[in-house]
Structure formats: C-alpha cells, structure tokens
Length: 290
Image (cartoon, rainbow, N blue to C red):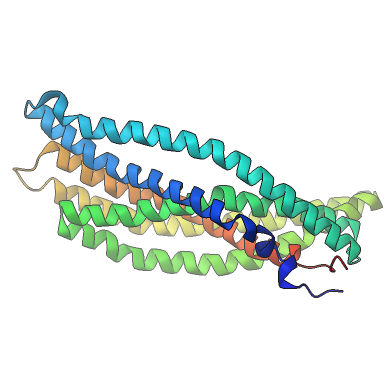
C-alpha cells in the first residue's frame, strides 16, 4: 500500500514527544533572551566602570552570564537523552513499515540515514533557527533603543535580504529533491559494482552538492552587501554624537553584529529546512504495518 495514514507519518511519530520538545525549545528561547541581554548589560558595565561605579556596574552582566551557563548545561544534557529516544522510535517505526510495504532495501537504507537527518533538524536546526530569529529581531529592536535611525536602517535592509532567502529556499528545495533522488540509488550503484555506474553516481552527487553550495554562497554574498551598508551607516550614526558614551556605542554595534551573525546562519537553516521537507515526504512513504 503506497498511501500513508496520519498515524504513520514522520510528524505523527514525533507527536507523543511534543510536550518535551516544547519544553526544550522553551529553554532554548530563555538562553537566547540571555544572549540578547549581553550587549545591554555589558554596555552598562562599561559606562559604569568608566564613571567609577565599580563592581555594582558589573553585577547585571555577571548575573546574566551565570544564569546562561546553568541553563545551557541543563538543556544540552536533556536534549541528548530526548533526541536519542526520538530517533530510536522514528527509525524503527518507519523501517518496519516501509519494508512491509514493499519498499526496496536500497531506498530504505537511504531513508534511514535521512530519518537521522530529520531528527537532527529537530535537535539542531530548530534551536539554531530560534537563535537566529531572536538574534535578528532582538538586535533590531535593541538598535531602536540606542538610535531610532540605526534601527530603521537595519529594518529596511531586511526587505531585500528576506526576498533573497525566500528565492533561495525555493531553489534549495528543487536541488535537494534531485540530490536525495540520487542518494536513494546509491546502494544499487554499489551493488552493480561497475566502475562506470559507480563513477557516474558519485559524479552526479557531487554535481548537485556543488549546485546547492553555489546557490547558498551567491545568496549569502548578495545579502551581506546590503548588511554591510547598514552596519556602516550605524557605525557613523552611533559615533556622530559628541556626548555619546562608550558603552552605548559598544552595545549598539554589538546588536548590529548580532543581526549579522543571525543572518550568517540563515542559508544553512533554509537549506536544512528544504531537506526536512523532502525527507519528510520520503520517510512518510511506504506501506502500513497491517
């Protein structure tokens, strides 16, 4: 049977873990709130130390730092146990179902590796996406706090940058489908053992990986041109006031660079999301356990 009931899909298999997933993503969100507060509290510390306030000026920064250490340590230990259990559940469920549904061994072997990638997406890419989103929007919001025009400049350049990543996402999905189609034929190519077929297979894999990498690099490069222009504007704006305090300049530039760092993660997150969309379709294929 080729159709898949809701109870057999990848997301349905993960569903029993939804509360635990929500908990770990909530802790990830808290970690990122701490990170957003770093430049703000460090700016306070710099201004306070320059003005002779001593250790009192440093206390907010120190408190955020140690709270982050405790939270991050706990989350990492919790995540390892949670996602190892989820992968064991998902992999065993779909392998048995697909073999009973008549899916070939080569396709099941390839999709087993893909299932690991799908769980890796939940474990690594979703937290990375949360980090990027909080860093991006948190950085822009905090820039408005230090200088309205700086915040507005950063917000404006997000329009062409988001458009670039939207177009890249569509291209990435198309290329990912072709790459995964080829990966599903890998066992057959190896079993054939013919030099020509094996060589053609791995050359095809290399070709699609190069196309993906080129699309990612071009998108990142164009986005970074817009970002560079915004950061240069912000640099001159924050230092144009003769009475500006050193801590405020530092914090404002740190938030601008936080936005840059968040956008550096965007191409990888977009590509991994494209892989998840395609992998979900493949993993959800197969017969029922009846």
